[in-house]
Length: 142
Image (cartoon, rainbow, N blue to C red):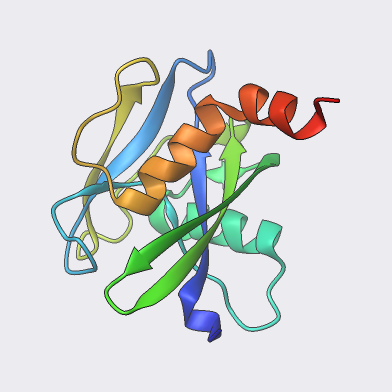
């Protein structure tokens, strides 16, 4: 698998963990859909550092503590895209639209009512996050 098919996405939670951050994608795969902050991993870059870098590059948020959630696979055109998923609720700053050519703007959405138009891989990441306790029970059951 080529490195450009591997990336990180970050589920940014507000301080009380009831809302998460999504931006409307522009000029990229599935433009017009909502997506989490994230992007492709650079050669030899640690996953955790990629998540922190992408968070700053896209939102200006300085992530203090990212938590690993899991991995999801998304079929994009003719290849698999692997998303390593992290969550973050400890950060400095407020979300800014740092790359207006790639994102129309960042908004908070309720965890109990996900919007319909989310990039498929990022929707799978959110589902994994929301159901992680169930998944852990399944993986560790006797």
